[in-house]
Image (cartoon, rainbow, N blue to C red; front, side, top):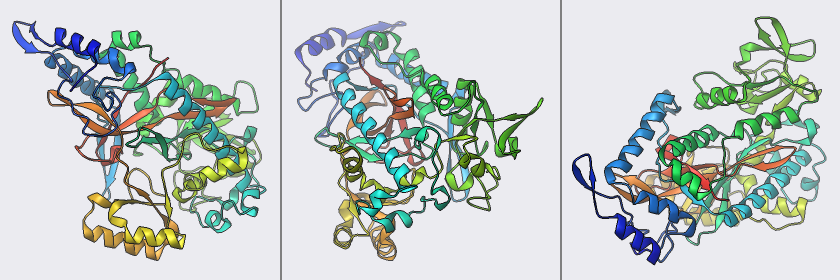
Length: 501
């Protein structure tokens, strides 16, 4: 790879043979790294290292290959020893796995991040206004900006939430918005996650591993911290309570949930109780927690249970992981729930296609971060286009997540194309399609060298006393060569995300 003159001279001076423990070993080098015409986060189209990445590149090229690979293996062992796992559900069985990590970070410069931050704040404000409107006045539906039947047919639109006003008027307290870059390097929103967004524990642990792996370059580069996320999360949860010194708990479905590690991790970091439904009871008009000293009133619940399983009396009567009667207490304002029940309607991938119009409607602004071009299969012209061009498109189910219910047309066999054509024709409301985007790439350690792998980015946004975007996020990476699927459940891994001052 060609490099700029400064980096090249430093690389040449450092890239000789190094004496280490009596053996001669070559230094690690990006000299042979190939961007392969994709937008690369570390190197530009002229194969020159990007300015913000130069200190990291220079430091890595001072290490021998064995040293760098040893640091990668040490990070993997740390993940194993910390028990940072997730569950993959396949064919009715749960498999526990370690979240893979690649120690080469994704680096975002200050000016670029500032634009992303502004765009995310804009989007969250508009979506919060949308949720409040949809469950109350429904002015956006009356004005025809978003079709009424689209909302009412959404699986995540909860009629029991009609007329509800959550504490402080906030619906989406914690959001994980998935961003991607295409070939032109422009950031786009891929999807919104407003129900129970996961992955923030990996963001925090990836940063701790970076501190262990590259402590000096992390400091020298000027990377914004993310370690105060648990404190900010707790402050937000306390803010939405109506009483001083509120009791906050994290509600988990239990140890068999795919994100149980994260639930317990965040509760421990915030210094609050981790509870299951069996630990809570509705009594005397309040939600109370069983303790060794008797019942204690709970003021705020950070729930990691899906909306419809939250309360068997108000939603799914078959739920065994919810708290009977909790929704009635919530409606009376005697307990705060984060995120608010009903937020899932804004996660609907068909509603996603209308978010630019939602921003314009409520804020009178153009979106700072655009959507990916989206074909709405419920609209006849779009549907026909998708059926005719399914081999070139990515097709998604409206309410699926984690890489499930998705067809990547260029990678799929003809029988899958036909299967999805039938599904779309049977239920067009349930599908959207998008062009296949060549996601940006970041170098990853493969064997003893670096190869590009495709990535996305999930920043985390807290909405309490204002909207607070955490400066970083989880960079998810498709570790399989050529793959565009970054989900951990589909073989993806993670990287630390360095946002520079």
